[in-house]
Image 1: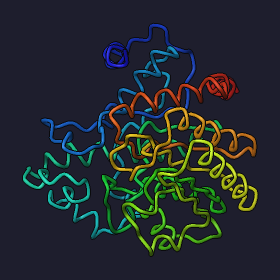
Image 2 (image 1 turned 180 degrees about the vertical axis):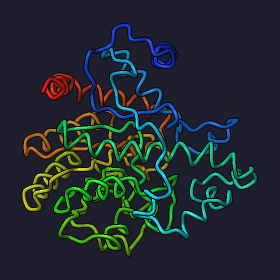
Image 3 (image 1 turned 180 degrees about the horizontal axis):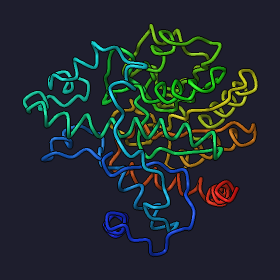
Image 4 (image 1 turned 90 degrees about the vertical axis):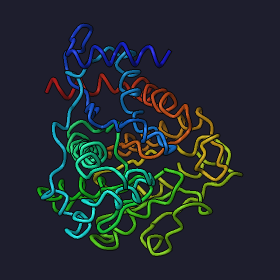
Length: 349
């Protein structure tokens, strides 16, 4: 079972056991600090804030890698790095537990001491931001990378919301642009909720010249941000009437046409899985687990076909079986596109 697999591989990861390890690194990014847990308070929100370790456990057990084979962000993002996108006033506001409670939609956090909120909530998120920053670098080197976390698409330069505290995709992209000023990014946001933080950051910090935002979402649920919608270059609506077939057809057409017209240098794929049938926060959208597998495969296929590096982040997903659905889809990507062979070929150069 996934639970037993999690126990086995987590134990070997924490012990640094190299038995059965590959002899090269693969561009998966993860640190144990990604997982948020504190006396069960995190369980008051639908989001499984410990799903990351379950996903890494399942993949490690299936493909025979340990922590030595994947990339570790090593540290949380610093305030100086965050200031590349976020205002000092917003970062200062996060010193107040009540502010973090509002952003994370967990009211009890407001009652906790500041140091606990910082260490148990903000630090895991800061590790995930560094993970997305590293995934951007790795995607340019390997052609692909997956941060087993990140995707905080409701966060923008001066606000957060929906469990999204920091704007990790824009922080990653802007770090890359420091040495590649002409770099063009295409964001493919397939989380069921509008990526309003991404839209607001594009409006504030960039333009259509270097950022293309494709957003596929349910327009009838949170956040309904009209201002942010002005930043969307290609919009696809996902509703309860969407089937696997119609959904995959719509996004495949939109992505293919967008890549052809914009010609990005990198794709950031915000791969939210809250489109899954039974997800409590998706407004009745009912894409199946098989549909998610086919969707992720289609996005990677388009990126590889057009030879555009792709950095994938996990973003939202609130169904009880979310971790196993994500793990199964990532497993399919590894197999379908021979991702381990691709990584070994790069490592050998």
